[in-house]
Length: 362
Ligand code: GN1
Ligand code: MG
Image (cartoon, rainbow, N blue to C red):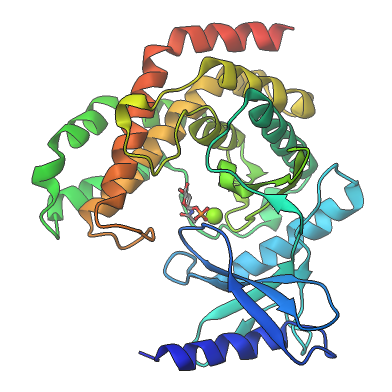
């Protein structure tokens, strides 16, 4: 294990390598709230644009260069389209390569930084949810003509709920850190609801290039107007089902509290916000979404909330090996939070379904 001084030296070296040649010194600060990769903001001393530098988590992304290639494919595909969104422009290093590998074998890449922006971890107004959904809709509409075969599958079966359930079952069976006893209610809940994943599999949604991680923290808003500047974090963009992107927005934008909040009794799915999401998401994708997809927007939300709950629960059972945690029971808090949100959705399911039916008729 390298000490901190050595690590800092490596980051400084890589940061300079991704800076324009004339830059001699660069300031480095941690950036963002991602639970997988490490991100840094690079500010050159003197002239020059700021950039984002990222170390890709190799435990999660087994082929980091594929993540980097996908980002280039996306950028090249979207940039001629003049979408109403800024794009993340990949930056080459001083040798012209799109990534650098440090002495420890870690992969690094950089892209343009978008200043004067802010992110949120829950939506404070329905308008914010509407804006985000419209932006994600436009982003996905821009990808609708990108052949899924052109994108690497960077994490196989990423949103395959049946497979996520299987991984959870394995964690439960081996119970490596003996936590199963403490989460019996959560386990029973998953077992009771897991048919959702079969329903998703049976629906056979079309494979498209989708974002796969449209949580609210991955939407950049302009500072003053709270309109959307960019859809960021393209790491998991790959072939998948578009309903998972809608579902992840419901999960993080129709909820009352962020996924890290332990006030479970206050976690609820807000109908008005759900409606704003439908109204933002569907119009830009008119002509893209099939009737099969439009009919199943609520299923998309159930799928992703329950899947996220079992991913957090499986990680808790495994002893917190996947997600970064900021306190000991963080994954348990996240699990319970998602369970409360899912229950709230279930209680309003028929109303939500009716709302979708009328929104797509208009
Ligand atoms: C992870 O990349 P980041 O930290 O925004 C995860 C998502 C989860 C999310 C939950 C590659 O997202 O799937 O929904 O945490 N990404 C990966 O906050 O597993
Ligand atoms: Mg991500």
